[in-house]
Image (cartoon, rainbow, N blue to C red; front, side, top):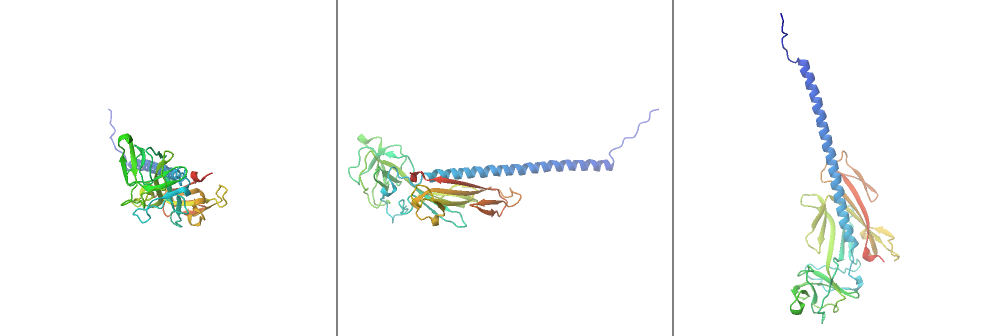
Length: 323
């Protein structure tokens, strides 16, 4: 006779052992997930910081290199026809800076302001100015608009003024625009330029741009730019600090002899290079295990949070001041 053994389930001990093994496996999986998540967050923060730092530094480098550009006319040969008492007046020819100035922020970020012409120039066309109050003719497609501040320059002299009206040419001047520079409600102090200009002269758009650090609408530190006194525009977020020193040529040999803060520059027109240091931080906090220690201008700084930070430094030559 065949007897069947009775069926039986897992014992309590076996069930507990299985549960413990399962918990260990789950804990391991969770640990791997959390580790991968932290690695991803850190990698993402590094990429974002490097991208922001490179973009900000590249943008500032391009702008500063072209500071103090006045066509083929030297800074001392420029005349401004703008009214200092007019609303929105900009002193492009501020004595003592020649298209470059800055503010020393001390413990706060510095700022820098550059000025000059910002395009390749548009050649003056016929009919040439019969008088100093006459309009300037240029080819169409230039992008200039009413109220723009422009400069006309040949290799002897230049004038800065506001365009009061861009008019279409008629008859034999079809395909051209005339740039009117009247007084009245404009910024022009006078409707007369310092001389008449012909085909050896070019027209440029004038810009004054100030770069500084401030909080954006969500409270994140960012690099901003203000152009010709207009409302500031955010360029890139995550820029926590900007420190600037100026390479001044004190003996006229065409080489900077010292790098000093803006308030210690003896003659801003003798500055041949600018050294920019940016501190860029991650948007997310908690990326680092501990507050990061980093170095800015030779001084160690301990962060107040656990964001990732990286310091970017570049020395930029001002091309228009090099021999």
